[in-house]
Length: 315
Image 1 (tube, helix red, strand yellow):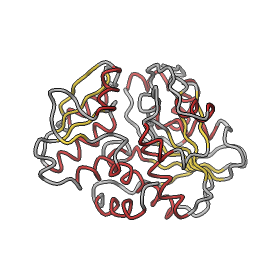
Image 2 (cartoon, rainbow, N blue to C red):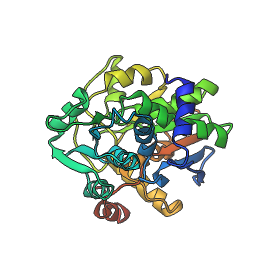
Image 3 (cartoon, rainbow, N blue to C red):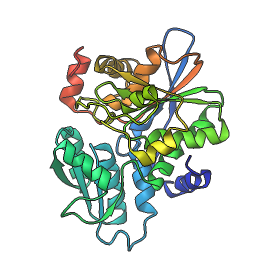
Image 4 (cartoon, one colour):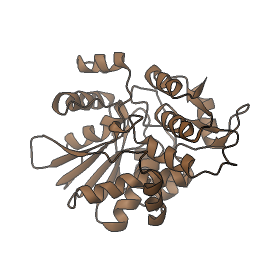
């Protein structure tokens, strides 16, 4: 669990940088009430500004003397580039070769330098925390206490925005988002249940909970690029495993349907990972839930992909 003091400090650090995002209802049939935490309204269209901003804004000038470096499929990259620009230092971003062009373009607009590599090489950068030929402070997109504390500020807002939610569903990529939010919420309301949701094209949390031990899986890139992986990150799982009450692995067809649902009913454009929580909540997967908070984590989606989804296809 991330210490409450670290999350409170992160909120002060992020004041004026990250938005306090709204919690809005989603009209659905049935007895379950669904609330959407719209993190896609952040300046970089995802929650990643919270973690990246907290890590970089709290870093010393000496630590930033050679700029910053991260490995990201796109959203963390934008958060790092945004925060680096605030500090006046360069940002280098290593991305997997399947990263969406819309996210690459956004990184470059923010002044970040993009290095595309094969997925296996990108994963190795995540594991090792370095990339040969690129210097700077490595800001891990997940396995960083400042990043997880920044994510925890979402939990503080939820506690202030609603007093009676009983379930939170969070997309799981590396685990830093659910770890931060659950740390903040469970410190005040330990009875609230947290569920991770992943694409079935790469669902190591679901596999690990089923097996009772860390389990790697096959990973296939999909339009749900901000979530799913081949394996858990041990340092993060050590925190997350104590906070998660269950997990779901969803087919991409259901995730695409959730993107359409959000566009039609709330006029919100979510990326695949951002719609995962809504897909799980509306699919009736959560037992005994009365009021569910869905973390809509991001909205960075290629226009061509969005067009296909809105037309009824699954990319």
